[in-house]
Amino acid sequence: MKAKNTKQFITKQREFKNNMSDLLFQRIFNLLSNGEFDIIVTSKTNGEAGYIDYENYTIYLNPKIFPIEETLVHEAMHILKPNLDERSIVEMSSLMFEKLNNTKRDKLLAYVQALATKYIGIKKSELKPTYI
Image 1 (tube, helix red, strand yellow):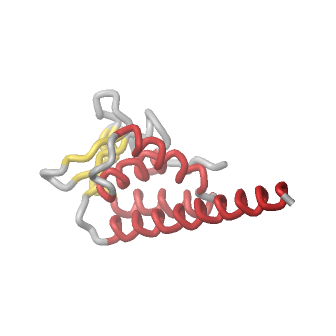
Image 2 (cartoon, rainbow, N blue to C red; image 1 turned 90 degrees about the vertical axis):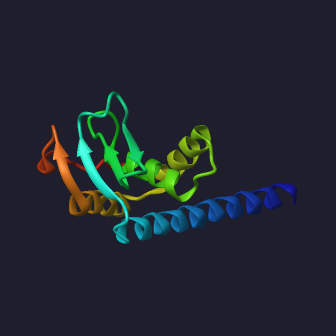
Image 3 (cartoon, one colour; image 1 turned 180 degrees about the vertical axis):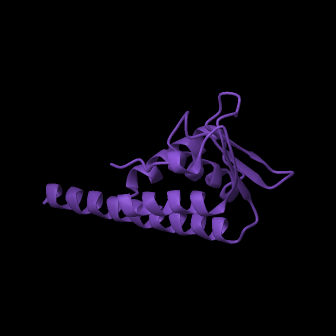
């Protein structure tokens, strides 16, 4: 009986994580869709995979350091959850990124390609999705 309860608990945990991942994913798309933040894809980020310039409402992404989709998720989480520390953001964005299927990864990349206002040191055609 105990093994059955444990299995049900694990299943409910997994279901909760999937639902949270979907919810956060939707919030990221809402954030990107409202046009408040510009996206600049650049290879010149001083060794950072990405960062946010809050004064100019700009998200900088460097696909040469880390997968651009994961960096976008990470930076968007900073905007959506401003009270969380860096470690928490890294953990949340990594867990969420692991849950993304290839379709959602393609959608993230499509958003970057559609919304990027500038490319510096990298061409739009060089952006490729990171598949599982």
